[in-house]
Image (cartoon, rainbow, N blue to C red; front, top):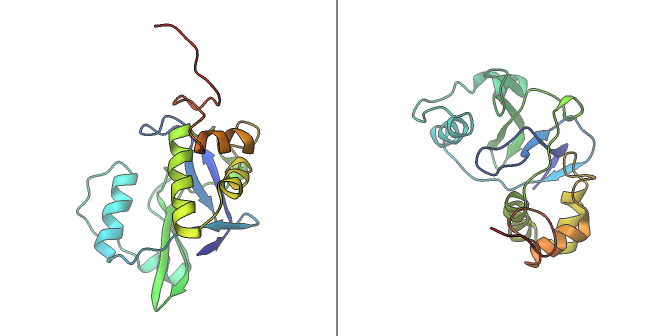
Length: 171
């Protein structure tokens, strides 16, 4: 599916060692996404994991279902967003409370870009060139990664540090 808004990269991921992906539903444009049919408990568990909390407690989703947006706190991934209904089920996600223009942007790592590219290829059937153009144009990646570097990364010609080309160095 395509969501109204835009993907951007900010802060520092402990897992990916680079900028994390966030969603700004108020930005212009469209963001490709994939919908999964989850129970409310499954959604709560995923949200808890992304918030570095212990899974197992259900979320009260009534506020987000009524207002379209609800805050669970001011940290990353603590803002719930309802983007409508698909096949009778609410389309929910979580993101940061701030707008992309206010965010501390940060370059995503090569491993994270590869992971996102895999999802875009699988769910949307995009070519590596379209994926590279899209990712290189997102705030946080823009000016840090260019499309050619991302294509090289996806072709396996970039090193694991996220720098395109050949890795040269000592021990």
